[in-house]
Image 1: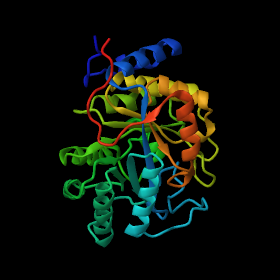
Image 2: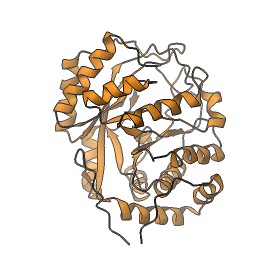
Image 3: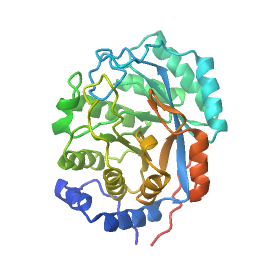
Image 4: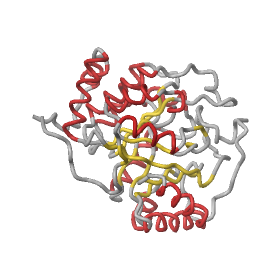
Length: 328
């Protein structure tokens, strides 16, 4: 019998799941994963920074914030032809989702947004799932992106509402939730997760997962990021995230949101193949491929394909919706 899809999890229930002895937790998550998903496939996504640096936000982890001296050079919005060329290379290398990120606080109704809408149309016509992460969106902007063919929109919560103010002061948690609501109402798939290693407590991690798991609809994609400390940011000296913490987060997310694509995102460069294999076993079924995640390092396509071959994994096809898991 399949584990039920629930949106009424209590914080205490999630804390109980999160604190399950690790091997038992991984087994439980793997069981749920097998019920709802094809465990032999992984969604391969590519993330491109189409506008880099100079952001007015103060996110304590981000090398693109204008107020931090991180060595990131500011680059204006890329040209459409350059973006489509990069998307074509990503598709040829096995990616089925192409995400475009712009270092903006929010989307403004101007010529740059019109250019992004044109990029969305172009990538969509290539047969790839097209995703954007552009900051805060109004309902009207979300509709325009949907009309252009946007498949998914990424807007992470990062951490719990209680700890959020320690990491970001230039926008509120409710601002983030409002953007997610605008995206959902526009009929666009929601991509929303968080970051481990910001200095948060285990309780903060539980509460962030609680926010995601009790949304009216679970996010279709839940990225779990390990902080990549960048010199010049306030979190530059934070300790490396323990791989067991990542596995615990992924497993808990899988149990809470059985049908979501749980993405093993930032921080993979410090993980061995066996570390990543345990993450896949615990329910991760999506990765970012390519040598960079916006401005931070990431394993290359070739490294990932070698890992896939070793583990017997294959890239998930684009626009796949049907459930292929085995009912237990």
